[in-house]
Image (cartoon, rainbow, N blue to C red; front, side, top):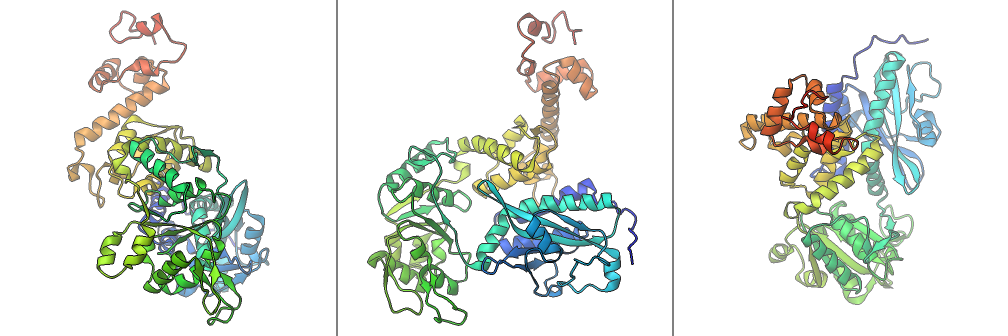
Length: 540
């Protein structure tokens, strides 16, 4: 029996879509665990966009099967596994392209394994499934699936819903790779294959004196084998600095293995670091080489080292002192040659005084400390980073953004960036995503950057008054009109639907020089003729 499509539900309301994307990007911002971020993302799809049963499926790296990971209503989602190519979900994973099922009932390849939908539900529901991609060098790898039920509708509307889910899947792509690591409890080895400039990766953006000092310190540390402790607030780029240190060291052709000590429960850290022997505990069905052995001859980076358990601290100290480790359930001691790099945003000295961190381990890892300053203390780095992220996200999302307006730059420079580089990256990713113009403007930036808190009006915070806000908007619109008109004031006035006298007054008020926006062909005497107040004011 065939289904009849329901009338259009006006699903793709532009404002609603932007609000949902804003909620998704906020969920992926600093301060949330990965699982919490994905759960909030699914909640946004269900509550704001009215998708039914949104869920994410990821690949199990051991078996190669697809397994259900997270859904909006966990109680309604039993475990289910799909071999690649089996069912709609398996087909999307195998082929790497989205599939729309206009009506579930009567579709032979729709297996209905996960939620046990009734015949009545299947008669009125469509199913949309899109792949989650991750860029892996020159290749695009499908690492997961994002899908949802939705009421049956005309094909054009289902296509719009599918495109919306694809946009969300782009945002999830890089995050899903982290979930694979959490499920498999494995951490990839990273080889330093970037071109080097002065011993450091050329991708590092640093213009400030303080960051140049940090990079000099890393270059000095790279030549030796002393343990390095990277210190700084969350989001300042300690992981990138660890990669730079490894790239500047003689070990650059050997693996760099990375572990976030706060990402795993304390009872799992020991096995992750030192490995285990088959039969050491329930579930240990095969031998496992720990991260110390994986990093043999290379570098091991322990992020958030202050979160190590007391037992793990003792074993890390022994590995540093003796150069050997002992896997769980194994009587042998195995020699390893590992250069240890640690990072933390916690005050280790206070943890030592409180008895939460071993004093002897503290002195072992603090041989060569490097402090990475927060972004608010190095404003010279903000604009180069903005240019880098704008170019990167414009290319990634296929957006037209090419530059940032002056008022928007002023806001970015004035903000205090508590989340540091990570927050700057997320803000610009959101801004590029919602910007439909070649110029990213201040209204594309989150309200919190302009002093907005908890939804309060900007002028209610006392940081920016109504008059100043209106003036910023006026100035930005005039500059944009002049740029579009190639410096022609009369045309800019017409585009803004105001008189020449008003735009001339506003240009003087806001100190706007129209000559900056003249077309290259307008030079010399013609530029002088277009100057406000000249005898040829009628020229347009």
